[in-house]
Length: 365
Length: 272
Image (cartoon, rainbow over all chains, first blue to last red; front, side):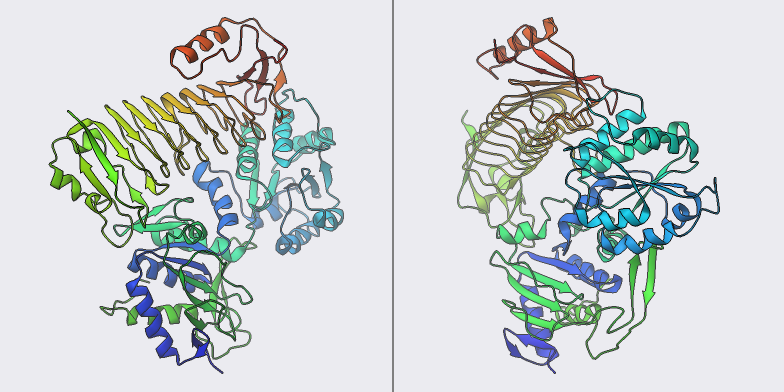
């Protein structure tokens, strides 16, 4: 079975690498989009560094929203393990992505063994825009709803903060008295949120609310990323360049700018002339638009539509071993291949690409 | 002496960093030295002479004939003199300017007037998001001066404004005055969702009753205050507006009560 194509023609991996390297060497403004494990991400960033390109994650917009809380404001965070063991009061904020529902259900079936050791109670601040798909989870957790008809989540968070500080607001949230009572009794209340469910402004309001609570007691938050792999890529990018994705290289120095280095915008506005798409998840296709030539490193059995060069790559944890981020443990974990295949890893292909560039340079990772 | 003029030869293929083309940075440089300054941001080293035809000698008065949405950081760090662009500009126009005047006759991109310290910046077209706001990782937005947008502004106008005046004359997007610390924002026309969200102090002045306020802003009646008349006069004297904005007895909301409730929204009552 073929693993490399030039256009729609199957070719050897070596030919595809040579062809892709020519495109990279002649590019004026190459851009890179990735969705890979730690090694794939590191290799892609190292190649972008070498070529003076810009890089972004495939879920760039959601990730930028999550990153903005950290770059523009900051916050108080704890680990999921600490919340499970110490917190008897959990307040869910907005819609929690389905991938984290098992984690929350596991918390619900356990009791804190540290702190006040009371049985856990749950509240939920939803907002008018919250997807009803969270309803089943909230019923299972017996979460008490804090809401006011027709208010957006950001407005509800503002009202919640005002009411907890004893300040006036034009409306009141349902069950606020119950929450105040629970907060008074709990030694370590924890707010759980995801970056995909609340706009950055709401996340900032939530963090300032937590700061208010810490004046008189102790409170914190657990951040559950919308996509664990994307958050792992953000952390990997931070350790390599000092910045999260949406970083570019001008005069060999990295600079972070969520507007200027938005790869999709650069493609649409014809600033980029070459797009390198690295996706090991499978089933994903690069976004259309612009006139940039496309090199696709994809978990695929057929050439990517519109790509000048396609090279099939494997997925960490399936086709080969790898390292990914897990929000459940709050750090990276190793994955063993469950169905080892002939597909090369993205990092291996990118290393070969770097070696095929003029000057035979070695990737700095 | 004729103004130093950069005439655009053709639309640039890449984004340009024009922060080096200010009166202070160009003082004492010959035409050849100016033409060799690197302004490209990509792998090919694009220089001033590749993109612009340079005429005139007066570096304290700089004119860009022709504009592009790829002209980034134009007038950034301007401390004295005047700059004028006859077309559009890209991101971060006038960033951290501390004096002089910058006039953009077209529209500007995101972060226009970011963190201005002093001086006067005027955009005759529209402005993008985060007008006057800080970049990622910065704690304070505009700290002084006057920033005028004759068209519309995007979302988060006046983010973390600390001092100075921002005037937007044809409406703005969501979260105007987001995280305001102090200072004044004037908006004529419609405002988007939740103006004044997380504002600590400062004044938001509207030409109409705001529609989408957070419930943490409370109505405070129609106080008779000297400030509104004085500020109306300031807007007319500075040629920002040609008629009074608020009148002598504007409506008032106080907030954001989620923060400290020390900010205010003043608006012109339509029935007068």
